Length: 273
Image (cartoon, rainbow, N blue to C red; front, side, top):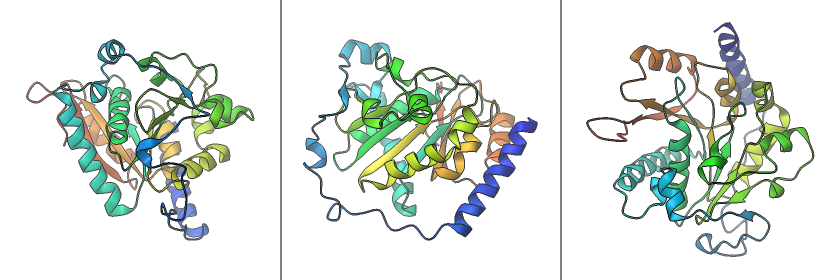
């Protein structure tokens, strides 16, 4: 826990330095200022690798937001609406999805939220696997990447060679590949910070979602926190304790938390609070 405590202090310093030293960021360009080759709902992927995700695979991997008629679609639509409200009210567009401890379903929540946001024709979504020690997002789409986020950070590999489009309109994924041990250092590196800024500011209709490790296990979420707008906390019904949630929120003090998601609830599956 000592390393996590140190990370809390470092994250606080980073946020204060960022607010004090960096000049006021210009507003993200509007669609009039940033011409695009086609309307948001008619994007053509010419450089990004396209990956077919069959209906059977979507069902097997519980990509419920991409399954027409699935009852959980409405739950994720409700979550999307609440997220949109918070983002619009604060002029935000980057969300880190985390949890107090492992096994809460944060990765699947991040994926389904990204899919649901991408289904809104006025937005595009980039989903980033920032769980560098246990990258797994690509597995949910049945894809084995040759390159991942770690290759971008360690080598001069362009993002266009790493991103893939999982056959879901307006959704692009930046996968992980091999696990790395110095994950917190990578997440706070200048190259990672610059990449997030580029992704969040290039298009006014884009929302960036990052899947990050649990708060109470390693300090990665705290290392990344100064460079995202807000966080969403995922809990597991019957598993995540009040003490774990309280401690996680304490560690994230000063970092905007837009809400919590309760998975596997017996009263209402996928309840959002």
